[in-house]
Length: 74
Image (cartoon, rainbow, N blue to C red; front, side, top):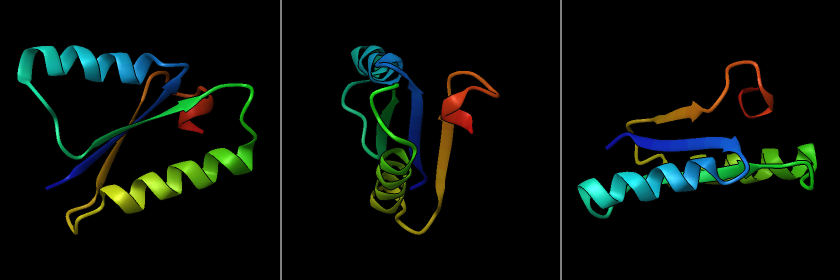
């Protein structure tokens, strides 16, 4: 299964996951990482790296961001 990592400003990603789960039911293999000003760059790198390792079951990980060129996609 391909894992999905959603990285967004604030809690947008977690709310999108909740909305999808209302329609589809519980989702496996999907994680949200919140990007906000309180987190440093190194902390975010570590959190994203950990999430990717957790999600990668051998088929890869699809990374989705909320705004191309924004902090989450950089």
